[in-house]
Image (tube, rainbow, N blue to C red):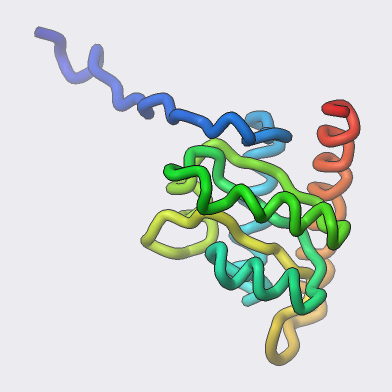
Length: 150
């Protein structure tokens, strides 16, 4: 038997889907989830496969963030293809729970689309600038990871 100091809470390793490439590293994952949180606060976020696919087909641009531990995998296999056809950068993060927390929802989320403009209304100029700079930074890193993959 161990004491409370010996027993620490550890996250169980998640089973990643074999198609989860490019997968964000720790640093990029943290930045990406921070961007998702900012976009959620600014109401510039589409959550879930259905909403993301609809937005991509309507021509909205942004960064698609997909969870890597989705089961069954068939739910999200078409999303990267849609993103590539529409020239939208995409990245996988290890956990759907972390993605949902960043997107301020209680239910685990398969994928989100981070946009720089809100779907309805306007946002504060300061918030818009901060979101845009974070977005540009993360997209540049995603492009770097993607180019090193091929």
